[in-house]
Length: 122
Image 1 (cartoon, rainbow, N blue to C red):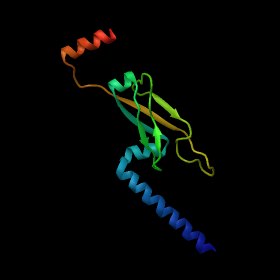
Image 2: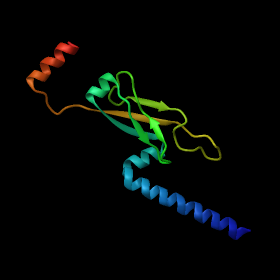
Image 3: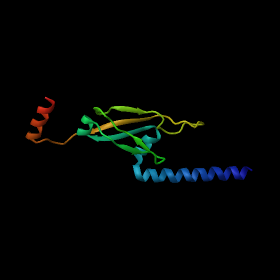
Image 4: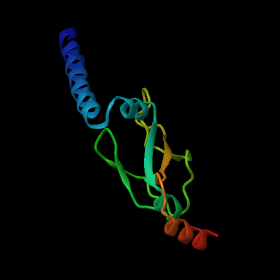
């Protein structure tokens, strides 16, 4: 009986190790660490931050998490997605996922673009 239990642990660990390695190559070390801690950085363009956006992000178990926003998203804003984090120890429940939004601003604007932005947001 002890050997059967031992091999179950070995197989479980091997499966976890393979999944971890696949996620590592797909996401990169820094993003994977953050996701394992229940946090995620999400990048949006300036226009998306101002008018909203519809996006999804793939979780480690391949299900999609809706990261959409209907309003204004501020740089460094953090949103909590209940039950979308990592599984809780000795439980069938999941923790929460905290998403930090990064807003990509343009490196420069033409004089015409500046005028249009001032007219709209003025």
